[in-house]
Length: 112
Length: 118
Image (cartoon, rainbow over all chains, first blue to last red; front, side, top):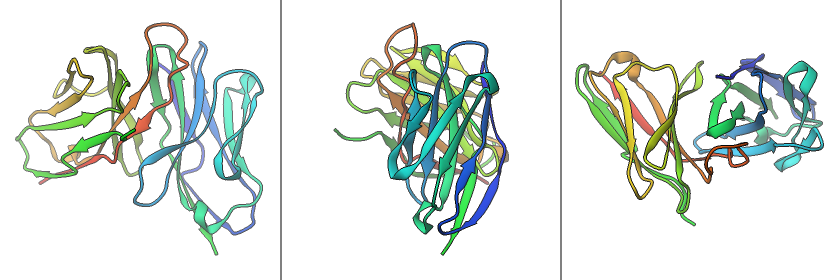
């Protein structure tokens, strides 16, 4: 089965700083890639997804991610974070037959 | 459409007991997956059911089991509870189809069941 690693456990930024969260996966076949976000006290929700086509995908709230196949990476970016982006972010990799694996998560704290 | 619902929302058990958690997927979704969420471990995949069959399985001991009914509702059972089983158990449904490239991987999560084992 595939595995997912997220490099940062906790990231602390000031408002307006740029964000990049790393995600690498290990799998030999075709994958679908996702970033999910969990705001405090809320359900996990989809931020963005990559299935095929343009490797630069845009999601909600100004987030984007770039799929670099040669590096098995799918890093999440946002040019200017806001206090409301404080949340936990999970990278996920889906293989055939809906086999989905998540990373350990990165907690983002944005200081006002 | 109503979202994924999970019952109960909170549960307190003691070591050695067993527990059953329930999940109702979004209407029309045939795939249900279960995850264990603990601080620092992220979401660990337990298993996925599709059309009443376990299709994918994570690396959990046999104490963790599940099933899916013909209406796609799913239950998860943990027997002989241990302290380390304390966690948030999340259910997610997906409109996944049958075999082939998984264009339906997107998962919709429920609020979870918070299990505390004393």
